[in-house]
Amino acid sequence: MEFPHLGQNCSKETCKRFDFLPVKCDACSGIFCSDHMSYSSHQCQSAYKKNVQVPMCPLCNKPVPIPRGQEPDFTVGQHIDNDCRFTEGRKVFTNRCTVTKCRGKEAVPLVCSECRQNHCFKHRHPLDHGCTGSAKSVQRKVTDVKNIFGTSGIIKKAFTASAIQGNMVT
Image 1 (tube, rainbow, N blue to C red):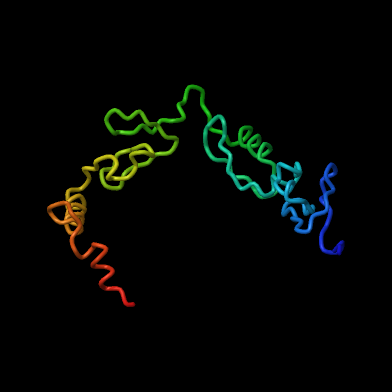
Image 2: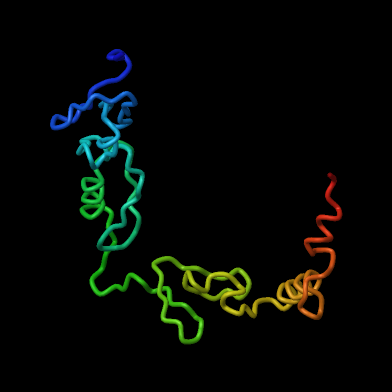
């Protein structure tokens, strides 16, 4: 028994396979089989409309916002022609990490709210760079850790699995 009214043929010219579960492309509105449902597999001409990435200017390394439905190359070209503040010899990655022996540099500054120093992505959290920020906040964190683990370094009974399970209602 056949069901010709249930499926549709793939819109790809070289395929035309009959598929019972066809997929409609949200960019070009074509009907495709499971092999050709991705933008790249059917060479979708409207895929750029769904691309929401923000490209970086190759000269000044600043993000260039692109309105929906516009080609990224065109917008970046306009930015370079009109708004780009690139100067020869200017370094892009000027935000060095202040951790000893770390050579990390980032395009954006990552300033710690505790010690007010710049760090790389690897050392951006206060515990990762041994933050010596305000003494009050560091002492508060040490106290919090001691409350959870106790002075011996072992988790207190209140946080053990058996204590938690004992409080569970069956």
